Image (tube, protein in one colour):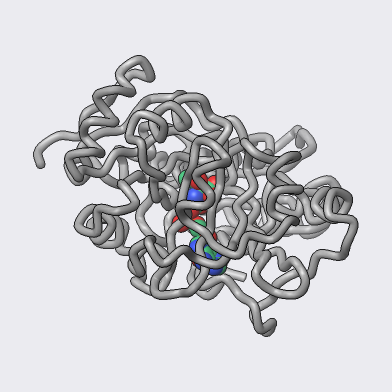
Length: 317
Ligand code: TXA
Ligand code: MG
């Protein structure tokens, strides 16, 4: 393939045809861009793993456009799924359920479970509807790199390797969906995101367990390094730590903080730290050849569990 087409949202029909023909198409969702393929096209699913450089034991998320499609991909669906779906679908919540045997093993990397979400982005929903099949879609980035929140990011990683990207502008939320496992006795939060554990607990009226590397229920994705730019990241927590980091390094520095910081030395460029633009700034640092990224994790940043999770992973913690 020579060139990746950039399609307008009004060309969603063209994108659907490409997918039906077994090609890969990146599309916008409210979280990050997804790299889509038809759920029953095993060749296309294999190429997702190849072009991303994704380990074959890391399962994919299935995207549906209406709740009825859940029965096609999952089985023994608990009531708690429907309770959560009523509140949070469509939106940035992925739920892990028992897999329907019709779904190819490849999709869930041979696990007996399947992760499903219904995106709220209209273009994404229309696309799934037109294809008339659920779409599998990991984040549209090379494995290990920050997720793509702009069409330009998708092209940075996949130009000439996928058929098309639909330009839906910048992603609204900027970090990937919350992932919740409902296949055990208690719900387990596998990946924090914009929908918090507390919000889920309020709706389910029960405790949500937080997964850690040592817990028995983990997400295969947890063991891989993630979201990392090439530029090294240093996390600081206090004003003293920041001052000392800024005076130690004299190289071109990108500084991210929730609160504005003024009177900075010339080699430092400041940007606001938000989950929406985190990946944009991590990729910017690589593109503009910054020598380091300093991120201030103050009390405000600490309140956002999704943001903190991505920051720590991006910094290799
Ligand atoms: O917001 C999102 O979720 C984006 C957009 C495109 O929808 N997608 C996304 O996909 O972030 P990906 O592949 O980058 O991350 C999927 C995560 C991985 O950590 C994977 O291990 C986990 O979900 N996952 C998928 N299926 C699973 C399963 N059956 N059991 C446990 N974890 C699963
Ligand atoms: Mg990803």
